[in-house]
Image (cartoon, rainbow, N blue to C red):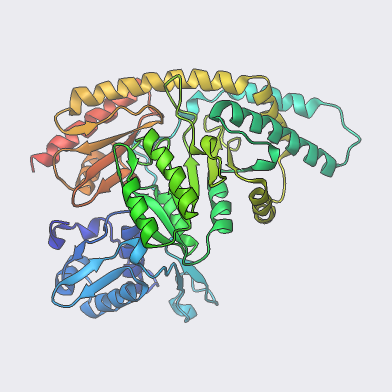
Length: 496
């Protein structure tokens, strides 16, 4: 960062003196959240305690106590005669839990027992009632075809009763669904899997959680891209993994840096969004794809390939996942299905060697012991009758039109202020601002004019000022208004 005094701490450090939680603990929690969400990047120099006390309106002894706690957990480092600095996550001491205050009277809810309190899993997402909103690339639920699903659901409910037991129905229904689903993945994503290589879960997040639970032990080293996906980073860090970050350029992750890391230390997992990197939207180049597979085979690490947005591609020959070319069984492939379906119908899945799938099922039986028979039967027919292909084709046409119109608006209104590349897939555009200004200031200016920018789409470091703008949920008139507010707000803060 250019200078510690310039950091707007009060915009993201929120202290509540009236709450029962001690102020020093509130400071600890708020600083950890700020580090995890990128407001305080690696290497940031913090101001002196006297200056920061004035900014946060707290007692210096309270702040010193909080800093001692943060340093003991490895979030910050104090160097004599140099100052206090934010540590990178791979240098931290992997303390992800706190013990609630032992005195019940000091607990926020005045409960009579202590419990572990995770700061890593604090939900960073925000909600707003403002009329116009950007997100990180979500589909438009107004495009959902409820009538087709309703017809299939009703037809299933009206069918005659069977003599089979409920357990028999569950087993047969689930196997039938996995058969149709594995065939669908083989057809659309170039995989070569059978039902034994597939696990389906109620959500993408559950799939990721199950995989990390089975693969990672505390202290294992996991490589992730920077900037990266905050949700997956939280899940990975919560396992006790030591996170190592590598940069991303126009061709994806830096494989030269990955090779250096492999020579320096033993890594357990490379977490990768290869086809559509989150948040920058770039794809891993063909050359680097082969290099990643070769490095995994040479050094023995697992590639955890997260293909969260495959369904939204706009070219006739989509880039296939690494899992389609994995001849050495080094790739565990997770993804999502049905993001354009009504809430509750989407699925997460894992494609991997059959022995690993069996292990995941043990953990899933605890988290998700039941099978929604009707839901799986409906989706099996949805796939079998070709409705999923028709809906996908229709939605891709709509989202491509929206992408093109959104890009035209950005070029028309913000071309002198930003640079970006048109994404070949997904529902968001990554823009980098040419002027250096504080994105929290931009967020507040936009909010004053009716446009909500959640903090999770704002990326700011010493060398980067960028925003991930989701367009998929916006119709043309909504886009026009949102981009106009964004443009006017950027103009306003640049003139301050």
